[in-house]
Image 1 (cartoon, rainbow, N blue to C red):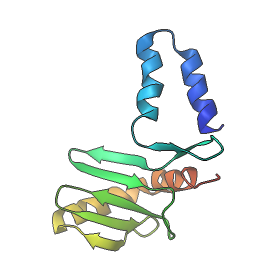
Image 2 (image 1 turned 90 degrees about the vertical axis):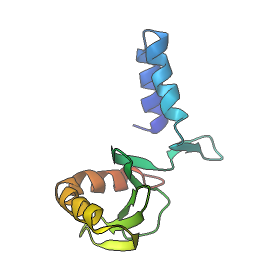
Image 3 (image 1 turned 180 degrees about the horizontal axis):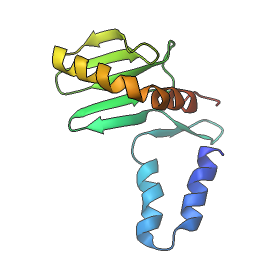
Image 4 (image 1 turned 60 degrees about the vertical axis):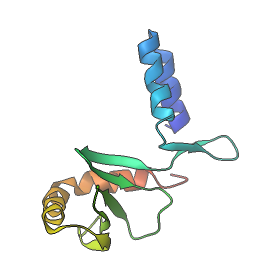
Length: 120
């Protein structure tokens, strides 16, 4: 199912203005853009957010498959398969916590990476 079809399904299933606003809020969240031919695509996917720490995957990013961890005082990217730090800086505590989280999050990260590739 395409993104357009998913949003159309949500809109058609809405029974009141509050439910109708949810797909609009999602579309306006900053996560989506539109190709020149009118197709919708995801420009970033929020995998997790805990307090001020966000884990995101950007669809147009280069290989290897990786995720970004953004916090107030750090910005780092990690390999999805190994969990190794690829780029950036992160304090020791957050790095250790991300490594622990990564062990159980690999399937979700892999799925999100594949779903957010242009053309998939």
